[in-house]
Image (cartoon, rainbow, N blue to C red; front, side, top):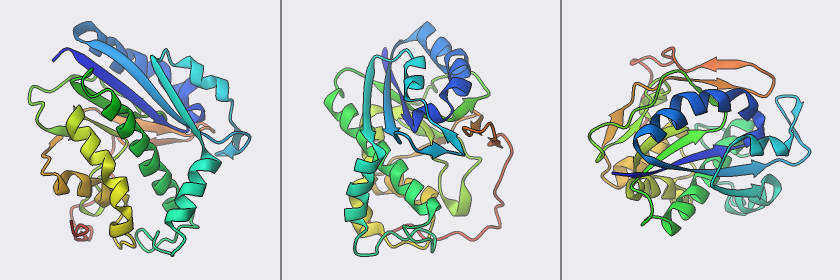
Length: 246
């Protein structure tokens, strides 16, 4: 394995000025020492809207020294999602589409699907992909595991039996399959389970085995609030919902 693509996604200006120095130190630097690394960015552009009470500066995307850049206006993405949800199917964990939690979950899956389309176009150029949410602050240096047949995630947000989303890595072909779960949402929704179980669905449907990465991270919001994913947030006694049928 020689060629790796790091895919940074989300509302990139939200926290990238806080997270990118650490991303560079803990991910880009160590991986670049051993592999040919390229960086792809997908930005969901909120334009003049505020996030966490802070107005976004879209020029912050340029903080990242990327090789590829794509963005969709969030208002355009929402039109696509509104059409998908017009029959009232977009219910996740009993939260309707008009709630922030479900709408943001749908936007995440939409964004990951855009990554899959990029990777499909470039699948012959890269052996391995690292998917990283732009507002994640890595705590540890990232290493590529020996078993590249697994797709690795952090496990500290495995709520209700699902898999932690936002950071995962594996062979490009496997990453594409997981991200294409977006195409099945019309079959999956409405769903009593959560976002993490829908993420797990992408693994199980395609027979992809999961590995647990020791990469820890924190999530930094635009207003500086930190959510610490280095601390286990779920309990093994939490109720576990069945996966959606394939």
